[in-house]
Length: 277
Image (cartoon, rainbow, N blue to C red):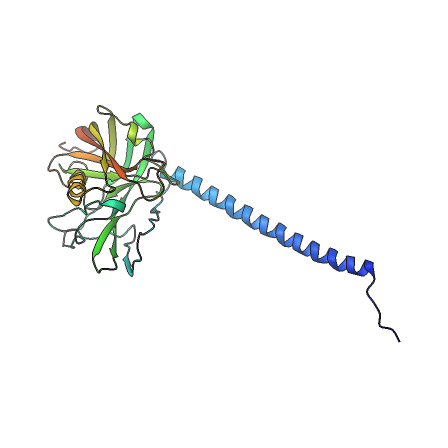
């Protein structure tokens, strides 16, 4: 008695079935990846459009994901919409290499800070963007020291938590990303003294005129230099707006070696409600 043997056509049939199954799986995988990529593209384009200041869409609240340079055993990240109290005598976190601060994080006090800025227009570089409030993340390093890392809005312009609002007679600090998806301040380097900046805040339009622009080295510079750089985002007791971004644009993220700042002084304001400016 002989055992039945598989014929050549039978073996080919099994091979064809396996090939077809693998082919169908690859088609399904390709379709999934195509839908995912397409959905991501649509979401990015929507966020870019929503971040523009000339529409009524809700401003995207997404922050840039900064890759930490060391392991962080603890991380505190306040919600973007959370209104936190700030110190009575507020001390702005000092920008250091990698966007971190030097010294302890600020202490909370009784008076809450609420940003009133809704929009910024910079005609020179065709920027018309919504503005959202940004704070900082508290990071505990391996040696136990706590530092604060400024948040950066992914698509919109960020108003530094605790800096002044327009009309308060102090430094209004606004930061934007130079790259990434939003890259709202990609062309900030082209802003020159004499250019105008229009800030919309609490029903008023504030016209500022750029006084100076400068590049602040942050990589491999002494601590004293980084602290000196930080004065541009600290209170000034004079009405001004300071725009901050990383520089240069094509440097590998997030290790930009410098920051670019443009400082502008208030010329006048106008709006629907009477206000002294």
